[in-house]
Length: 153
Image (cartoon, rainbow, N blue to C red):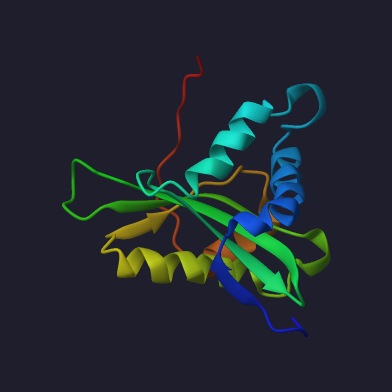
């Protein structure tokens, strides 16, 4: 990336620039238009970043005063470890900066914070068709071999 990139925790003042990135992330996964997330979910997600009792956190990538990426992550307990796990839930970069190291820098930011928090691992999932992102993920992590199952209610 030609301009320096700053990875930092999200602030309340970032909402106006965070929201289009969040909307872009959700649109990428088909959550837009008639299938968009309810505004209550977006509002709650945003508020959780600033609630000390919530295990949900957000970092943003800033370049030249503009947000160009986001990552959301959370900590949770496990039955197979004492240390908490860190789940990297959402990662999105502005299309104009893709391939310029923003995603890698955001993941690194999560790694650093998870390690400082005493987490035993960072993990995430992506859709099997997200080949572009998987090129990066294969360089910064390892495939666990697990298949994800779910039941929606």
